[in-house]
Image 1: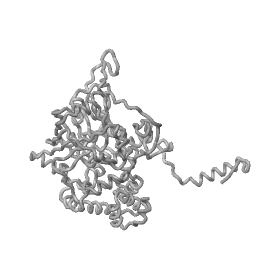
Image 2: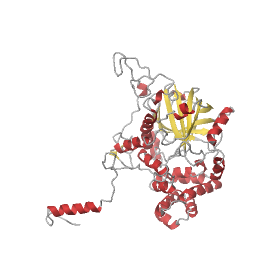
Image 3: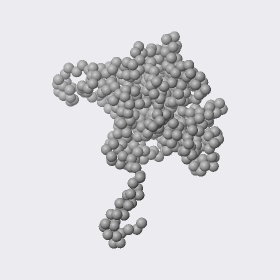
Image 4: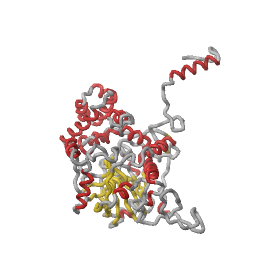
Length: 507
């Protein structure tokens, strides 16, 4: 349409603009709660490609805040959980990597671990396919450190701005209150980086046999800081000493018919019998200079650090169940923001969002003073001027409630300063450059035995076969085909897909 003011009067131009607006009236604009339009709902606002997420990203913060407040008093995610007390014994001197005293060789640190299912509700059976939370609170002599991870080594998404959407898609429909593969595969068809995690989840690893015979993973990269301020990047892996055991859907159904709390009961019974479960804590370490040599972004939560050696740094033993389920297990509050000197969050975009959202969630669920509850209270003195609020159990007696002060001053520790890192690039909302969404899913598939591959195909077909939208189904099929042609071809056949259409989508 070539319209100028010379050809049309101002009134005519206004009429044309109105008509043009009417043509687009059925297009709904995504907005924030104040009605302002959203510029990018897919990527967090970062200080350059490798920089941290900026707090001024209002859309990210608002989505996480609103998401954390959707339910009360039940957790939005990780609602069903089992808590266990124990201890961690450090076994290797890694002072060349971190100044964190929890890793001083021979150091014994009390711990509390909460195992959980992620998506399903508090009263759901423990036999359902779901990632399992594996959260560990270390009561160290420098304060509490929470290592909050899962039983699987990667995650569905790489940016925290997509977390509320992901969970919404996996939770029951707001209309029917039923979990629906049509909904979550619709979401994942737009999220190709989910292919790796979906391969893990629909394998037999998606239904652990119990809580003792499963590994735990920190999922994210963290930073280790040594006494000289040198930085290394680290990933954590809890390796079970009981061996891994998973269930097929048939086995799970048989167990569920008799006991919907089988995993919790197994843990209680073994600890009561003195059969204390143990996990070795293993780490993988990368120097910042090594990042460029990798074909993937090592700060991407959808990736494992393949071909990087693991080193054992200690062993955890769980040996005591809580004496009150609510006071310990339900009131326990974990957050990646609970860190100690020598351990810091990396620039992982998903972790950066979790550092904020988990603490914010706990403040909403349990109150601003939730860390004063016995299960969350540190074993060292807490000295700050955070005051008042519901449930405050502090013992503040000083007239001074500010800092600095010449009357009652609290001093900072140079050893607790954050590491210094040069920041380059421009502020942005863009995907990372090294996405490499499918390769590691293919590596995982090829590592499975013949039986494991068949179980994966059967499990995946059970849900993907229910998807009625042909485009969604074939986009998902193309992801698995791009991961591994055998994998893709078999699942295409299992759900009566069209191989030619998948090939065209894979180009």
